[in-house]
View: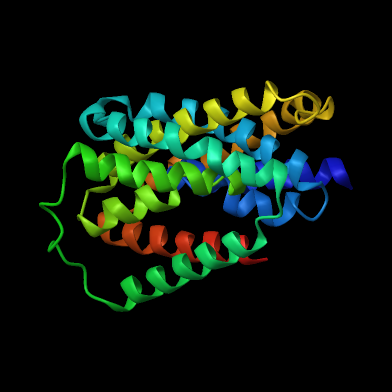
Length: 240
């Protein structure tokens, strides 16, 4: 049952990651956190996210905007170790519930509200770094660093391809850094992690391919709605 659950989580998370460019952990975590301990499930989700992000970024490489992504990554580098400390040293349930409630509330509000471009001119490296800092902090103890950067892009009316070109490099950078930091801490990365990651890879690849196919079949309005619903799923997953 454990192996079936890992493959199912990787496949479903891969579909979402291929389609939206984020929220792998929101979907996969709803399954994995019921069959694996968090200290194993979260590094597994991070490892699978690295693979899915690297694969899908190859398809969207021409849309990568390093002017926005790099400051965000710099901020995330500062916030991520704090989040990982909460994961390893504490039980961050209250933090997850609070941020999950925020995500659900924000996404539902934006679903019933007409799209606006009132924040379109908000930019600057300091703002991007601040968003990255909070995204990295949250990602450290949830394996979901992309939620806040997605909100930031949504507020500014960023088109779906450009959104992926900003958010996905950030997610990839945060997950690589997180796994590296965890691997340097004795006893955190367990021996099962490489085996479980290899087990998940075929299902993950199939899911990502299907997700990319679905992405190519929808317009911006539907993508926006799907992204907001995925934020709802992410928020609910954090609160469970």
